[in-house]
Amino acid sequence: MASKINQKVKENYDFYSSLLSERKSIFSEVIEINETGNNENTLSKQEVLKHKSIPDKMVLIVDVKYNNHRFFQFKLRYKEYIPQPFFRFDSDGDTHRNRIDGVPLSEQSITTPHFHQYNNDGVEIAFKTDKLINEKECKALEDINLCIAHFFQVSNTRLNNEDYPSVKISSDKLAFSFKDDDPNQNVTFP
Image (cartoon, rainbow, N blue to C red; front, side, top):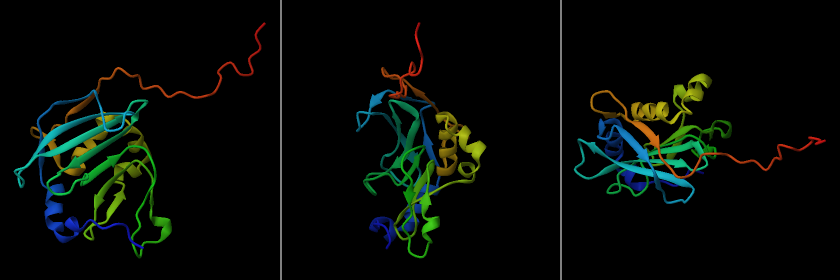
């Protein structure tokens, strides 16, 4: 059984491929993330991108979890084409299952971090780049600024010539993970 098919992507995969592969430009040197997103546990920022083949607005969306700044997403969206992002990166979260006919079950599971894009059948699939497969490089990409450069390389997005923007997280909430463990457990006080 295959996954849900996006008919617009399937019917005009060449256009989808050009959205993804052709050069996109961003104009902000620093992406400052300080607004609450659609989910109140997330900080979010949208930046306008320019793409030579489309006159309308394409956007980059950067989402970061309040309580875990290593949990972030980068999304490319062109609402005039399809309402949901057409390309995405997830640093953390659930494992994605590529439900594609003919692919063995053992090869369908893609853990995070991973990218999402559509294949020529209009099915959204997750995949890992070589850098995400390499343990050391994947560990380095937990840094949001290193990872956005990787996202921009894969999606052919640039600032000026070959530069990438930096990400600055400005929030009134701290990124602490809290555990229910009692640090004084098993400690005897005199």
